[in-house]
Length: 191
Image (tube, rainbow, N blue to C red):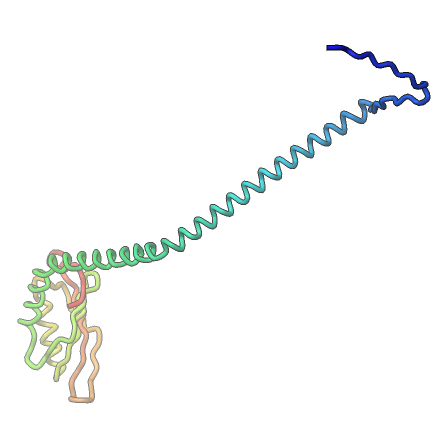
C-alpha cells in the first residue's frame, strides 16, 4: 500500500478551518445538571405512571372479582343466618326438654286447684314470676283458685294483677301473678 501525502496549496485565507465550540465550565455544568434532573424527572414520571396504570388494573380486576363472587357472599350470609336460626331452635328445644318436667308438675298443681267453669288462656313466666291469664263466670272462683295455689310447694305467693268483666257472656277475665319457689321453677318461656 502506498501512502499519499496531502499538501494544501490554497492560501491561508481560503483554507477551511475547523471550528470548535468552546463552552465555559460555568455554563456546561449547570446545563448538565438540568439535563440530568430532567432525565430523572422523566424516569420518575414514567415509573409513577406505570404504577398508576398497574394499580388501576389491579382495582379493575378486584372489582370484577367482587362482582363475580357477590352471589357467593350472599349465599354465605344466608347460610350464617340460617345457622343462627337453627342454633336458636336447638337451644330452645334443649331448654324445653330440660323444663318439661317442671312445667308438667306446675301445670298439674294449677289444674288440681282449678275450680269448675274456670279455664286458662295463657301461662307465661317472667324471671321467677308466673303470670296466669284466665276466664271464669264468678269472682268467687278466682278467689278459690288464688287460695288453692298459695299453699302449694312450687308457689310462694299469689297476687291478683287484674280482673275485668266481659260483656259478651258475663264472664270475668283475670290475671294472677304467682311468685315461684326457686328450686322448682321452670327456666322461663310461654306455655
